[in-house]
Length: 246
Ligand code: 13P
Image 1 (cartoon, protein in one colour):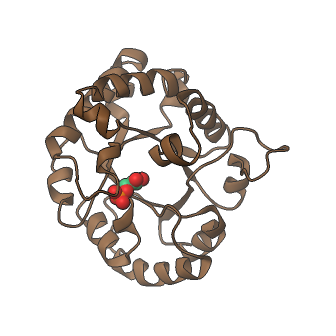
Image 2 (image 1 turned 180 degrees about the vertical axis):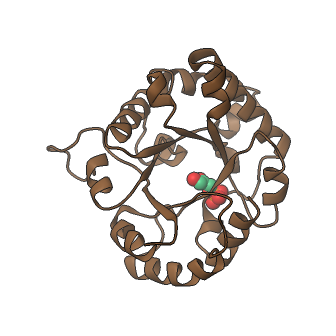
């Protein structure tokens, strides 16, 4: 169960969050919990989450280890700061802030894996693609360009998040049925490229307007292995409720 804080919270807010959140999930041991704060908050989040079992991840990396890339951060750098995970190819980066293409997603994923991070690769169709019945085509294309180029050994170490863009921050959650069908499609692409066992072992998260009042319906679907939560992960109580429903 993962929380993506996007561009919210200072280091001080981060410390406060963990003081409130840790007691709420103290007895949770049925799932992994990962929080993706802004990069500037990673050291505080790592320190605040020490000995809690909560892992910390970055929201983005550049694919080079170091160099003249003003404003970028490498996988090695966030790893050294204590992060163990990283988001790759979030739709806000693909479509709004950075025009990331599938090829960039592949390079970032490979860089994350070389640095020992677990990448969560985000895929999902835009509203107009959803309306035009093109969701499956988009997922096939994003899988082919951003994921199929991994080796089998690399593929075994990734997590995929299905985040339909029309459901992100809109309050319009995908129905469990829509999410489940998209996950099946992704799993069948994984099976074609990496084989049955690798596809069955792949964890696929759903993201997009996950809230305490819709988490149970989503987690009832066997195809949904967890969720990637935006807005509702900013509040310790609502994220704890979501985590407990996993
Ligand atoms: P919301 O939960 O705010 O819709 O965001 C989802 C998301 O983009 C998580 O990465």
